[in-house]
Image (tube, rainbow, N blue to C red):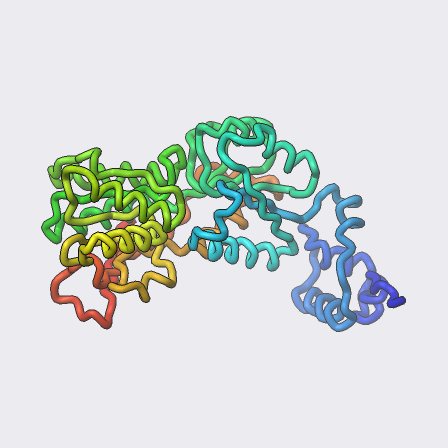
Length: 354
């Protein structure tokens, strides 16, 4: 049986004390260990094949060094293309700071105590919540319990800690782009039910762009999606079956846009000839759809990194409050919006003033 490598083995190999090894491996703050010594300890640990004893660390520190990520749907990873790069960004920070990532799903309206079951199990130190909702009673109760929670988007709770990508400005810009192309009957399919903060913000931004351009808002041109391409497809079919047909669509995200384009093709309509389409998120698929999708960059990976860093700050005793991500967002103009003068092989990038 192979003997477990211990801190004393690493100390001997690196020529330092066990205390120094402990400080380095546990990333202890307030020590005066030089970068050179830290590197020597980490190199020795790697060379010896050291594997941390997480159970022992938890007993000593009271922490699991694990962050939790809560998704709104149990199967969100299987159909929402925004979640994987976001998770990658969170994982990158976790790895850099010696944390693990635990992903859980909490369906809206189910398992009233789901958040508390997760936190009471002592399997995580802090929680990151994607697609938060002010109607989620369990989430509100968790915030009020003072457990470290980072929300994507504010739900307006005075005790919350949240990061805000402020993508509503980009949603307004995308809608305005369609208006500037001459469209007045612009449909909108939200990427999720509007109880979710992000979906509601984009809907409000769409309406604000119409109001500022003095374009009539028609509620018959607005339908809620539910994260998936299939929901975008069915929402677009619903819109096409109504009395007023739009000339353009601002989709709440690229996943919804792809589903909507499929419905338009099935109905014998061309994009952008009959209906122009703009998506949101600039997922990798956007540059390879037919036609190529006009969309907005949202830097999902960077958002994940900022959320993980904020969660770690909470664990270190710092209040995050409502923090702006300060993302550099751009409208990527491709073929699907029908912008004239665009070389189909290239994309025009429009910076969005934040």
